[in-house]
Image 1: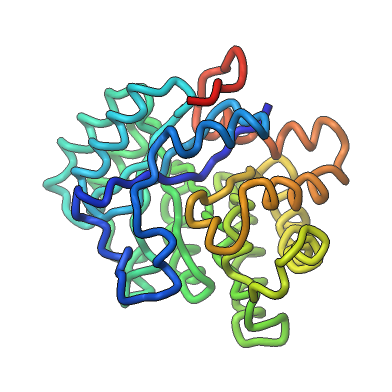
Image 2: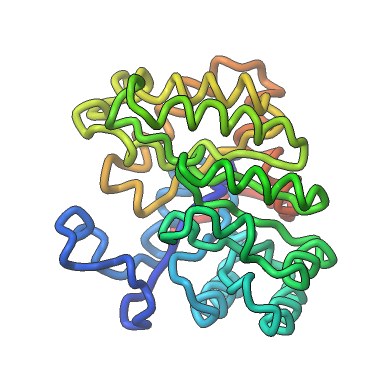
Amino acid sequence: MRIDTHQHFWRRSRGDYAWLDSAQPALRPLLRDFEPPDLSPLLDEHGVSQTVLVQAAASEAETDFLLSLADQHAWIGGVVGWIDLSDAARRPVLERWARHPKFKGVRPMLQDMTDVQWIAHAPQAAMVNALIDHGLRLDALVKPPHLAALLRFIARWPELDVVIDHAAKPTLREGWQADWVPTWRAGMRDIASHPHVQCKFSALLTEADPAAVGDVEAAVATVRPVWDTLVEHFGTGRLMWGSDWPVLTLAGSYARWVSVCDTLVGELDATQQAAVWRDNAARFYALPTPAKAPAAA
């Protein structure tokens, strides 16, 4: 069984998804509701027993919404929400969520901030300590320019478990000779030297030129350099698989991404495969052990 460590739901009538801007033509396929009945058949088809549901709006109300969905669906093993880590007055909200068994951590939307140094200076000690005290985690939604600041944050807080989302979004569409490459390579190497940090192998198809991921073989060739770098620095004991569904669907189907990862993960031995597909995620997010994969709804 697999664990999908990164998927989203949204109900657009809630009104707090600022990034879902209809003025951006590329996002138009996402301008509808995506909820559990849309995903559960895919999980059943591909042997995914649990998911981690990750925030998609910078609002506390959305976190409450996601926790309500988790209450209704046993296969949602955990929720990663949003809170303003720069506002110490929000600590009571964080502590309230921490009492929910499926609340696993928070994700500031760092990629959308104009201040690429925010994570290094803005989070308040009271908020970070609350995460640590309650055994919660931080998902880091970053791009290569954020890695230096994230490294300073990680070094300052060695007791806080952190996971890099989407391998820090290497800009594959620009190629491996572009300016982002040395920044990404050095940043991921340095961050991986801190043992409390893990990384998600997820969302890479949407970072590539569509022509380079049009079929499984081409997509494997495109993302293999990322995979090889992550295995080199994080090892198979600190890598976890995720889909980034439904954002994934802008570049390919759930089935295509599973097939791409089947090829790469399938080159490992059985113990390493189990680690990447599920064991690392279950340990990192403290997920329950499911009896079986979810039935389609």
